[in-house]
Length: 136
Image (tube, rainbow, N blue to C red; front, side, top):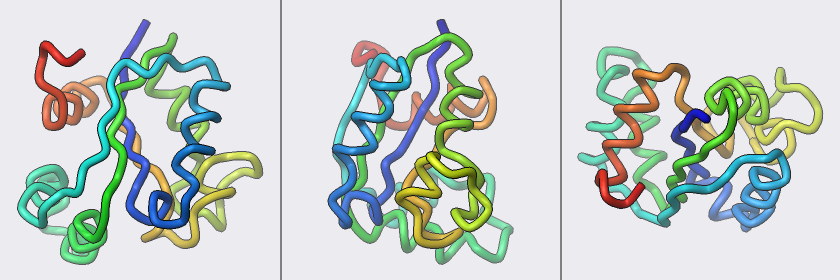
């Protein structure tokens, strides 16, 4: 079994689809190991996305991620990282496959409903950023 990190982003929470996303996660065979609804501060969002600090979208991304509540998750399944990324779909909802989270719930590349770790090292950092060891 592998663990990965996921976020139901502020746009999805605001649009009232967090429950539908959670149902799909469980329906796809993931076990939810940890879950919390949070409202990130701008500083917390900047710390989380620090690897993108030099990118032109950093300010807008951190503004968006601190704009409202989101749901942070620790998911577990066989090959969880790839499985979750496949279920999320392409970053741009317009290019995502039908039936993926981003196709069904995302509005744009900036408001795309979900986030997921892209590698084991990233998952370890992201899980540690939001969950203390004893919580998982």
